[in-house]
Figure 1 (cartoon, rainbow, N blue to C red):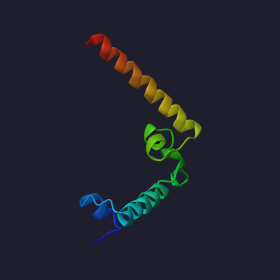
Figure 2 (spheres, rainbow, N blue to C red; figure 1 turned 90 degrees about the vertical axis):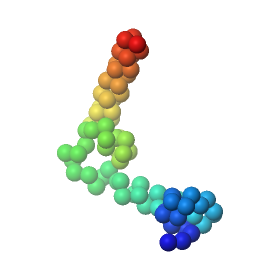
Figure 3 (spheres, rainbow, N blue to C red; figure 1 turned 60 degrees about the vertical axis):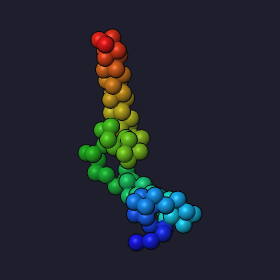
Figure 4 (tube, rainbow, N blue to C red; figure 1 turned 180 degrees about the vertical axis):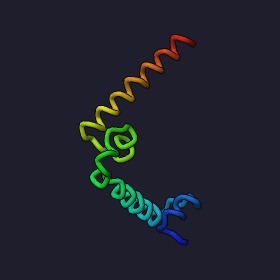
Length: 82
């Protein structure tokens, strides 16, 4: 393993231009593997798919809205109870 690899960037914390370019290429390929169109239809409608796969279909948007509504309600209850 040498310069320009994800491992060298991550483990050795090297920030030379070659390692930065290698890490950028690695992250881009990683994002492409998380394509929401490759998911089966039954996977949609969760906050996980909304966040991790960046899916913005109607089901995933509704799941995210529900999650955030519950999250803010819990936060408000914790502030009042504290």
